[in-house]
Length: 385
Image (cartoon, rainbow, N blue to C red; front, side, top):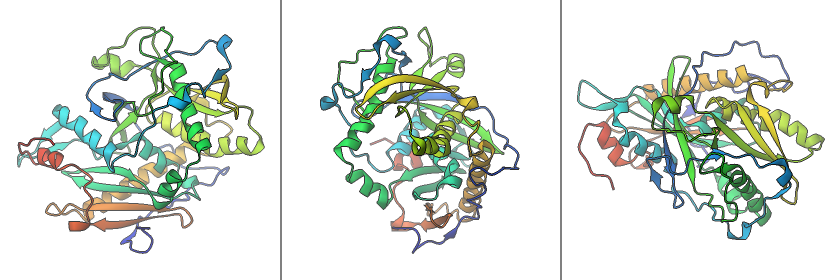
């Protein structure tokens, strides 16, 4: 479904609230420091695990070892297979199910979160970057349960075609990023990683964050790359979890040409900043590689300085995120129907600069949240599948 032909309306948003290079006069919105409140792992088989089993520590390869070959072992890489729809949001539901201390019992015996939204860092980043996105559409789905709105990303038709038509070269270049992570992360602090084993691209370590944005309580998951520490961190200790320092690992082209530099300044640096800012990351390590897949050097970026001399505005993107979420909250409250909880499809149409919405109910409603999770929130006893 395109969303354009069958939509029920459009969100009241000024999508183009800022133009690249222009002055943004708005103040920076009120946003609290994001706090990690938990974590989980996704193992080699793509299964949820309520632990930190795949968490890793930063290990920066000595400069004397460069260049490193990002193609090493690529013939044995274990790529992530097709993902079930709504897998990510359902894993976050699994985390909440396992940590029912997060829930509050209401007067009618049901359970609820003290949060306005449950989603992912990647979705928040996507929304933040929307004012500058004039080419690529995206599709989200949202549903409201006991006062909390859950947002998931779904594949557009263009996404599906792009995924199915990826060339071998594109697959290889995607795998370079995972190989860079293998070179730079280790199971134990100060112990060099084992890089001769095949890379498994399905493994993920995620933290769960909470922050407050202009009166909205946000609860979101975020995949984390590496812990910066000389000693083992006990993430199950709330104080150690609160103070842990994560770093973000990225790959980028070595020696950018003029067009690549413009693209980095206008878009890639914006994505990097949003992604890091939402989880309080201070440092990005970028592996700069050539077109043969040789890692030539590792460059450190200070997130606090990343916006300097860039045409985008940090205040503008956080302002847009706030306006988007407030608008979605208003819509979801307006159409709320406890007897037939709607799922709302949100279609960003880039060429129009509009976010269209379609309300799905009854047999048209996709199974975004698992039945066992809905039963839990109703205060019923149930067995999970």
